[in-house]
Length: 251
Image 1: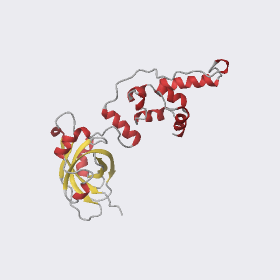
Image 2: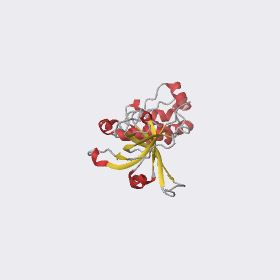
Image 3: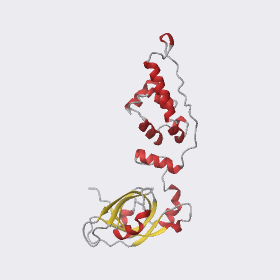
Image 4: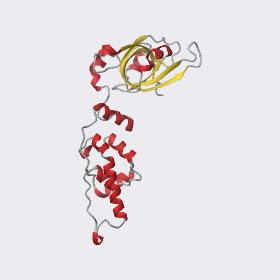
């Protein structure tokens, strides 16, 4: 990013994506870097949609390549004078990505959301079906609670000991508008709900909040998982049993 900052400091702000490509070192800022910058919203001030900018990467890079070749060959201007280049974007504008696409790309690129959150449009359902949030779940140790959250990550592992030896269980992260909490999905449940569990999917989870340092904690009880959609949320209820370990306390 230093090369980008240096280019901007040397000749003011970038006027277009093409202007950016012509002024920065493209060996350090390749297609992958450009697309990441676009998806994170770094070029929003240029006035074009992120969809249009992504589609116009080839056009902008082609202009920059042609300009550099002309400069390297000594044909950039007549009688040694500096050539005047038009760095306006020549690709058409396009409709913006859907809100879900925008925030998904933000999360993939930056690790967090900027312009919204996938659960924001489900605030009514969160209030109707959930009774805790990620922020206050730790205060409900050994209690059965419900939380509406995004399944931010999911990792399945094989059980090596006990009555469920050889079966699969899963651990993941639930993320809502207030933060995140870990979740454990045990073998019996995973066998039933595994096929429709996926990262990035909104769910309603019911289970017992348990401190990882508390031996003999209550066993998980049956609950529900909710997958909101354009239809009535009640149509997407499923049986689910899980335990949310309490996050360790800081020293």
